[in-house]
Image (tube, rainbow, N blue to C red; front, side, top):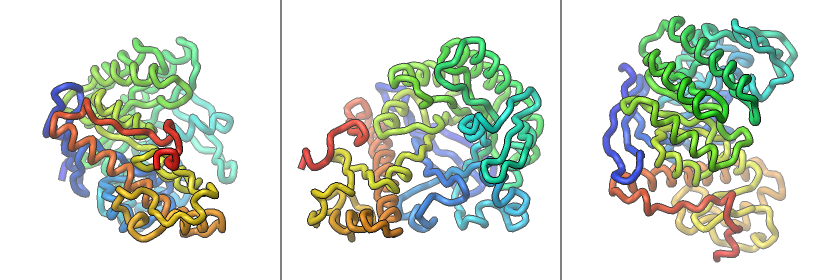
Amino acid sequence: MAFSFEVLAHDPHTRARIGRVRTPHGDFITPVFMPVGTQASVKTVTPEELLACRAEIVLANTYHLYLRPGHTLIHDLGGLHHFMHWDRPILTDSGGFQVYSLSRLRKLTAEGVLFQSHLNGSRHLLTPEKAVAIQEALGSDIAMVLDECVPYPATYDYARSSQELTTGWARRATAARRRAEQALFGIVQGGMYADLREKSARELVELDFQGYALGGFCVGETKGLMYDLIGQTAAYLPEEKPRYLMGVGTPTDLLQCVKLGVDMFDCVMPTRNARNGYLFTRQGKLIIKNARYAQDLRPIDPECRCYTCQHYSRAYLRHLFVAEEILGPRLNTIHNLHYYMDVMYMIRAAIAEGQLDSLVIEAPAEGREVEEHA
């Protein structure tokens, strides 16, 4: 089945929409949140548990899978879906952000990125063509072009040079495609400069990608600047193609950016926070290690229907965290992912009802702790 996207409904007051994406491994509905499975695994949880949390698509990372265990091995073992026992859609990032985060170990050239492995120091050249070839070997449903993520702050000249490099790489990536059934998304860059973002978006649209990502956000800029640039940039992207905001963010970010026209999101926030004992609830944040929960027999969130909240108390989850039992991060992750999926379902329902403007989602990272609301 070829990749396709159709808009099913619009919110009358914002740029939000509900859409359906078709892939060779099934459909998913947007707006959608993609749990991050960097190394072919969403940390601590099984694919069956992801499905129980209502995840529809997951993200894996080209950089990490290229270094270990290797894209050739994964291909020879039946492809990424079979390898990780996930028969639903998969999006693979190109590795551009990992190269950005490992800036001490890399050198940018017009040809590509020369970098040292963070595992053993071995040297590798990642080109736009190689990034496509790796993702085609992995067999993901959606692949991303190689890009450079601009740091913040950055000079205008640096951001312009980087944007031009990313666009040039995108052209080479389109020429390198061999698998028509795998969608390829372009990535809009340009730092925090609106004119460069517009230039990047317009040039990528001319290349006619199956979808478009907004990259280079959440690198230190203010929320106001981020929202302004996302809204301005999304307006230059085609209505008939999905728009993907990379690496963002809090529940409030999801709601605000859906209103700006974004369809797809990924972020490590729910899983990473779960492993650190930081839990999301409708009432605010909950830090499970706090002593106040030592005898608390209530679930994390009385309104939540996840497996964790149906079977385990705050007291038990605190015990697991303090005792450093592996079960603790697993149960916490199940809850946080379920919460994020609840957020997306609430957003979709509000769009369908034309009530998105009245939807309020408290971001636990920004609110008071849940006990103060109890």
